[in-house]
Length: 288
Figure 1 (spheres, one colour):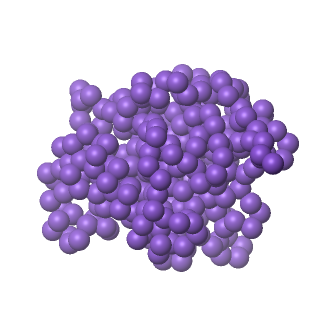
Figure 2 (cartoon, rainbow, N blue to C red; figure 1 turned 90 degrees about the vertical axis):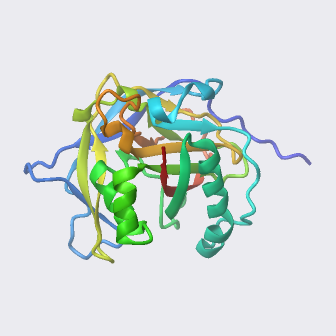
């Protein structure tokens, strides 16, 4: 007996997105990553939930570019040699080389890739990492340079890369569901319509290691342009550019080089819809 696969929601949709609201005491915003110590406040800033029109990019995938929008949609990708996406060591052995090759062949001018981590998210109460339903950017200009210094082979190589090479941080995002994504799809906003005032640096503290990075929360603004890819499947990828050093050059072609993104609850999702599963691999990409 054939299994009936429900049609996922399609088309533009208005859905609530969770934006940044400043700390009530006026202090600098922070959040704690990993295990939060007893009694600690995991995040000192609030949430401004706004209804947002999210456009379906399905059928218009080729119109978006990294240099203009800081995201790119890739279709018809080959199957991965990674068998299950449940073991970190196996993912690093099988999937990381595929991601590296994808970035080298897709990102214009890319000559070197350093993959520094990945996260698997599953919409399940037992999953340690859930979809993040808060608008954010994973890195800032400061933390991108910090990542280069942390992950380059030597301090000398890091300083050479920072001084002489275009460097970017790009996340490669894909669903792991066997069927098209039904719930908690990923929304992303064009960098070209993002104002500097919308981007709020947030100290990102790792309690287990003591490492302190920086992410960005996002203020809502009506001119932001939001998109998602309806019914996304396992042979599709979204490149999410968190930082591009070219964006720091005045008068250049890169429009911001940073993409806000968030999971969102689609009000059209059917009751009992299969929870979204996904993996995002984060990489430093160097080149021209």
